[in-house]
Length: 123
Image (cartoon, rainbow, N blue to C red):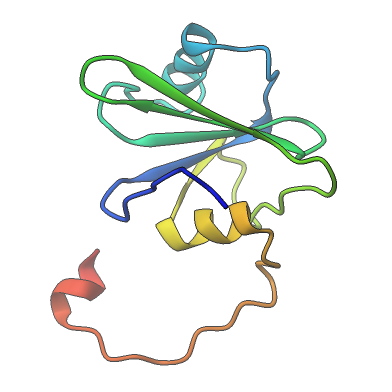
């Protein structure tokens, strides 16, 4: 069971480097600005994993302050999507993040074709 609500309307960005989980609000916002080249104040969700990939932190500006969600797995690791470039970060879809949090093997997920309007394809 999870109490975390992750709206699909938000944008999600994964930081590809290993993050020291002792970092708090200020340390994570520095990573967002310097490594990802993004503003931590724009309402996007920024996702960080430790070296062993058994802990994550998500940073979000909520309009009146920052929020951090943290999770530590008691067993196993989080699987991260394959990255094609040497970029320090990459966008994630809402669905990819849910798969990561639920422990679903990202390489074995296959989607069946569905009809999409032009508006859905642009997003």
